[in-house]
Length: 367
Image (cartoon, rainbow, N blue to C red; front, side, top):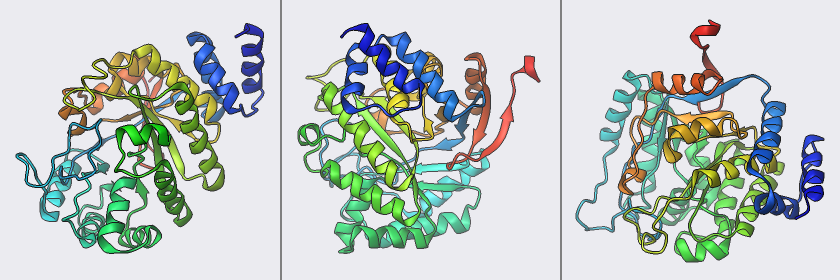
């Protein structure tokens, strides 16, 4: 593509104008990485002018690994009756949350398999008891897949399920389960999980009720460039309607121990990740925050991503099991998270789930 055409697109972004699908695809396929970084950073500081990079002290346990929807990218799930299956009681989970709270955790990102043996009341009870018994913890519970599973088990509609979760005290939901919002891809990697529209419909109904959520994208498997743009475009379109997404979180597929491992034996490159971060910041002009991931991409890549349009460093993740099942493990703690942000040239700011600032940590040289 002619450099002049790319410069026209960059100029459009710098003027605060929205780019089209075709222009997004042109940037993805022909934009130079450092040019994308430069423009994405301009957008980042236009939307979030402070030199702060936020993070949350969180943990990501799982209440069950039983699942019946057979996503071929997942190494975590087990079928009912298989060796290694588990489903924890509400009492067990509340005890874990109390322990996490005692260690400074403010958010529990809770997800599990889609377990048809669990009644809807289990999910409601877990929310109610968390809010009542562990008030220091914000429950950031249940992906769209789990909400759809609750509807199937209870016989309720998705809006009714969400309303009961809201009444129980839930206020935010994670953005997992999106993978790539293109049915061409979903039919190949998660045919029993539902369509792209199912994910969007759950999010739409949640946002209508007042829920806030993240939006995610898992790339680096069977998608094509056009599918990436489709994903970004439908997220942007839904955000126009209800402004319910607090952040966008892209990460690369980890093939270890999954059925896709023989087809896709390697991780997506750090260069591809930085490209995704920058394009996401440019394209999603109505999403407040873009999250860099030290966890899924490695600590150095996560730090570099802060110069490619990201303004959030995700969570400290005191517990995580899904990536671990794919033999991919990174760990950190609050102190190291703050130091990584400082070393990348930013001021660290601890936040809660809805991006309220809880504390600011300036580098020692600036204190």
